[in-house]
Amino acid sequence: MDWQERFELIKREPTEEIVTEEELIELLKTKEKIVAYDGFEPSGLMHLGTGLLRAIKLQDFIEAKIDFIIYIADWFAYLNNKLGGNLELIRKAGEYFIEGWKACGVDVNKIKVVWCSDVIKDPEYWEIFLKISKSVTIKRVLRAVTIAGREEAEVKNPSLLIYPIMQATDIFILNDKKGVDICQLGMDQRKVNMLAREIAEEIGRRKPIAVHHHLLMGLQASGKMGAFDENESINKQISFKMSKSRPETAIFIHDSEEEIRRKILNAFCPPKQLEDNPIVEIVRYIIFRKFDSFVVRREEKFGGNIEFKSYDEFAKVYSEGELHPLDLKNAVAEYLNLILEPIRNHFEKDEKARKLYEIVKNASITR
Image 1 (spheres, one colour):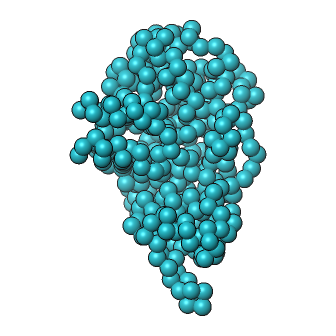
Image 2 (cartoon, one colour):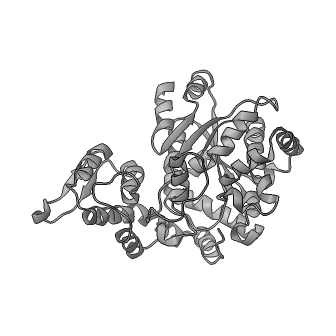
Image 3 (cartoon, helix red, strand yellow):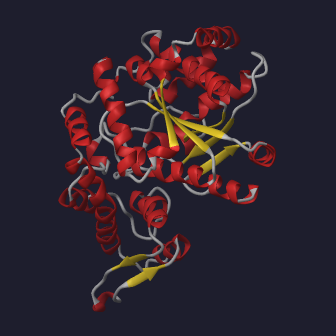
């Protein structure tokens, strides 16, 4: 596989931004063993965004022959008071996440799992942390607090100020100890990756390459607009993303066929509209990544079944009003059930996975 093929796999949707493409191309041309990482705060049940979408992108990296590290950020979940700040429960949620990615199709034998609780034992971690602390202003750190899913106005104690500094530290320590070249994170984590790039030279480090993927929209595509980013488009994406704390806006990987159908039928899906349409996003980022074609079943009097071989073909038909939202919703519910059925089966039949699921399901979810 040449560098161009590897680059296209990394750039493939749901990737939305590469900082910078030129640096990534140079890396692919000059370095044989390349390592990427994605970090996760373990908390709550997996939905399409945290489970399937993440697994799809992770598989692109594996196919591109990139060594991949999944970083379980247990102490970050503690700082952010996830699962009530119960570290034991947070770590169980981390184990559950690993089972979730396995069920979503990730070959766990081809990735490495690293826990934050192990990484922070290294004295060098705190040396880097202190150097970063001296290199940034309070104002700059406050701007990056949004990576924790919090707005600047929500910061009430120093733990949330520590959070972005620790995440920037992760980037550099993982480069030192694990050879990480690429940070592969969601668009909601963009600010800390840019912070790390800004301060890298000042603290004698190499700038990380950042690959940011799209955040799947919640089913209602609405709610309170937050203040997470100065860029209006990015801010909207973060504000309206699918979230476990708003369960009616999310399809969880454990949802039954009936739950999936109910949620999809109740979802926002305006006719002819491609942008800010959560059902269209599922077609684009999930269904066309899992299937070569997408068939919408319709009665003959409504035009009969219609098959799409690509997202662009689908987008043209839908935007021209030739496909009714209800027909689209019925098809999306059908395809999601096909995708999620083996995932549900894994958590029903695998004893370890089932026990972890029950623990997390019964936990009190905190935002």
